[in-house]
Every structure is written in structure tokens, then in C-alpha cells.
Amino acid sequence: MRRTLLLVVLAQLVAVLTLASPSAAQEKKTRSAEPDVVYVPTPHDVVDKMLQIARVTKNDVLYDLGCGDGRIVVMAAKKYGCKATGFDIDPQRVKESRENVKKNNVEKLAEIREQNVFELDLSPASVVTLYLLPSLNVKLIPQLEKLKPGSRIVSHDFDMEGVTPDKVVHMTSSEDNVEHTIYLWTVPLKKENE
Ligand SMILES: C[S@@+](CC[C@H](N)C(=O)[O-])C[C@H]1O[C@@H](n2cnc3c(N)ncnc32)[C@H](O)[C@@H]1O
View 1: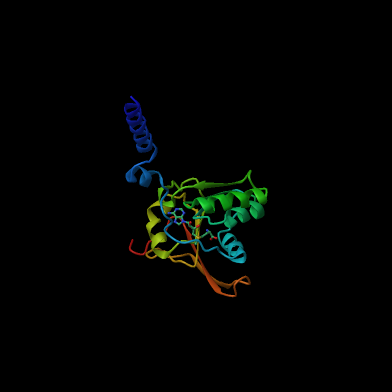
View 2 (view 1 turned 120 degrees about the horizontal axis):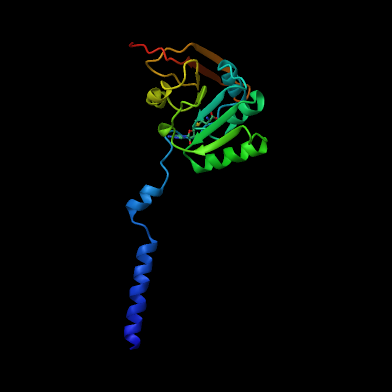
């Protein structure tokens, strides 16, 4: 009798453990994707210049694709009073950005979403900021082409092969004493092969 009871308890334990531990496939499905590029922040004076070059006003809606600690979104909301949304795939960056938004009291204008930038509808934005990689900028072209005419795209340090920029500005940041480049494009994009 005691042996039967022991066997039943053991069988129940195995069943509970099997249900509680997801299969490798399930785990892979629920884990968020890896970032396509590591986190490196844009110096604040370069952020300031990017927003100037994009001619941001309070009527704009800014999207920062891969927002890091949220500094671009925070400066856009604080300095220009515009709506700004930051997107990042890394939960740690999302947490830091949300803390940054809160610390700077811009919750009414700024929000942070944990999302993959390649799955976004960019059409609500009138300004898009980028600090990704040249290949990722090119990968974003189909989404960027759907922005409203007159929307501006600014990229820190990285070009977008095949699309002619309206402006390329070089500046030396007082934070790192390094030369940075800022690219500006305006929608509709000027594609070189069209
Ligand atoms: C170089 S940092 C730029 C941070 C910020 N925009 C700035 O200029 O200070 C790039 C950021 O993009 C995020 N990232 C990388 N791939 C991503 C993806 N597919 N979707 C959303 N965020 C991504 C990284 O987690 C990182 O925080």
C-alpha cells in the first residue's frame, strides 16, 4: 500500500515538473529577440544638434528607433515640447529609458515601448532618429518610405546606402572630443537608382 502511494506521488511529481518546465521551443518563443546592435549612447550635444538639424517643433511626433537610455526622446519632449516615443528591444534599456522619462517629468509627452524596430508602423512619426548601423538603416528603407511627405530622418554617424541625404553635418562633441557625423533625409526619399 505504502509502495503504491509512493509511486502515485512520484508520478504526480514528474507530471508537475514536466508541465512547469517549458520545452526549448516554447522558451525560444517567449524570449525577446536579441538587439541587432549594441548600446552606445549619442553624446548629449550631438543629440541637441540632431534635433536642430531635423528642425523639431512642438507639433512634431518623434520616434527614436533603438532608444538606449531614452536621451533623445527626453530632450525632444523637454526642449521642444513635442510628443516623442522611444523603442528598444532590450528590456534593460526600456527600464532605463522609462526611469529617464520619469526623472525629467516628461511622462505626458514621452513614452517608451519594448518593440523590435523592424516591426513598427512609422506612419504616425514626423521625425525619426537613428543610431543603429549602415546595414540596419538600409533595412529600414521600406518602413521609412511610408512616412508622411515632409517627415525628417536624422542618423548619427551612419549613412543609408542608395538614398541621397539632404545634409551631412560634422561636429566634434565636447563630451568625448570625437568627430561625429549627422545625416538628414527628407521624405519622399531621394533614391539614387530611381
Ligand atoms: C547605438 S544604441 C543608440 C541609443 C540611442 N538611440 C542613442 O542614440 O543614444 C542602439 C540601441 O538600439 C537597440 N536595438 C538594437 N536592435 C534593435 C531592434 N531590432 N529593435 C529595437 N531596438 C534595438 C539597442 O538595444 C540599443 O539600445
